[in-house]
Length: 243
Image (cartoon, rainbow, N blue to C red; front, side, top):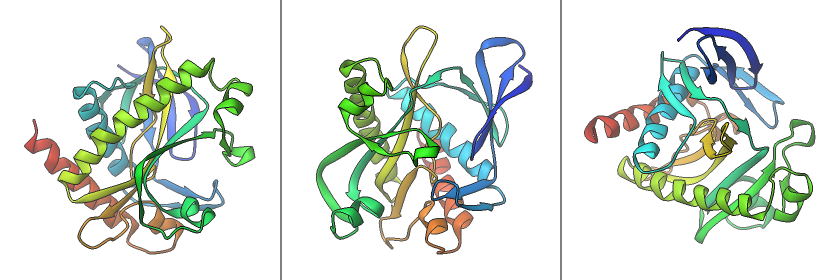
């Protein structure tokens, strides 16, 4: 396989075509780190490497557990080849513990556990700030075709949550919340897509409560890449123990 022309560049990744296949894309992880809808920006050495490896480990494990994704293979420290999909313009957020803006919005103490996971949809549109939307609004905007597709997204997100919580539990990390994206392949099958990284998850160390995710950048806490690397090293150990 050979990387060909650039198709798209986002805040965290570049997407290229693959010269030998119309069904695959080449994904390159960048060292860019952004927050607050791109208003805060920085370049972090090794960020692309850590996130590429973390995503590869998690997607491969999810595949073993029956969650189909666009992941095909990792081809370098910062690149992976994926199935081409049409991204569904919804961010699917799963919350296990209230934190960040949601805790603030409802004036609930950050770190408060939920009795059951909360699944939310956000409309993928940078110009609108990726707003929260209801099921009915998602259908109105034609982000999905019907209620059934929304139900599939919710169910898949909850299945991913069960698996991810167990992985992070095993490596001493609480999975607070996370964002998923899904896409449709050429046959119309819904596949897990994008990435799962400290950019898209809130991760707190079980013993110390230390943030191990992008909140360190959002809140100017420092040592951002040191904690990304810690997450990567723990997942690498998990992968090696569970081959």
